[in-house]
Image (tube, rainbow, N blue to C red; front, side, top):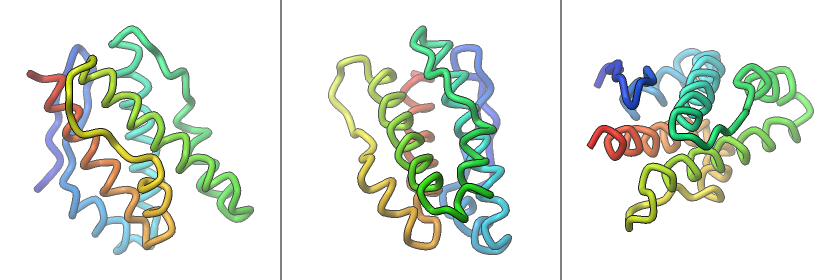
Length: 135
């Protein structure tokens, strides 16, 4: 599935193919992962502001924590944690107290250690969040 540009609550976001996201990460030896990390963090920052509860995160700092910060290991793990938390928090905002699936922060971090599987996991969560917000 190719990326589909959406406008949700006045914010441009993309519904990206989960498998395509991971394959691009693998084929480009992680370079696509840096772009993906920037864009999902930017989309979450903009959407949280549109929902009235801004995360006030900096997508550039999130990417810098991956590279070159990942060479020190701790910054990369920290951005995995904070991005997974933002993904979970955005889903909770979208659900607005209704029952539904929530993103697991622990799984989001754990999958980061396994060939970048946190990218498709977090993207799948965001795709679901965009669907909830579109309704």
